[in-house]
Length: 169
Image (cartoon, rainbow, N blue to C red; front, side, top):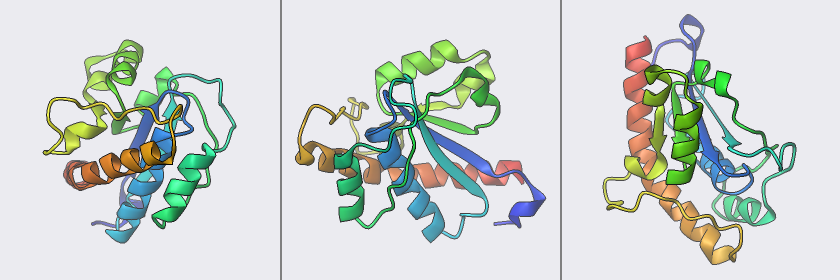
């Protein structure tokens, strides 16, 4: 990739409901893969929620546990996605169809809407159900399932990022 100082970074945000379970998990997983691919200087990864009731909170302890079990970082402070953030992001990844609808409703333009994708749409083996289930009211096994779904989508997300970087360059 080209020197990050010659262009703006490619920016990705993951969006779930409260920004304490699914989206921070996806953020930390993708951030590590981006780093391992040597793209850390060219790509910024973060997350947010459609609701703001957890703003400032750390990730759910079960999310932290799942991330650590798999060798990922987990430092996080929840925040709510804001409409004007579409200007700052190249890719806005919703974790389920409800988030997708809310983000599309927030979008001001077709260009904003074009940035929104479902996480599992990047997994060619996903089948017709593209939702990542909310593990909040469940146990560690549900968080492990979410981790698996996220990791299956990462190769497709990295392909999208590489394509986006070529177009930015």
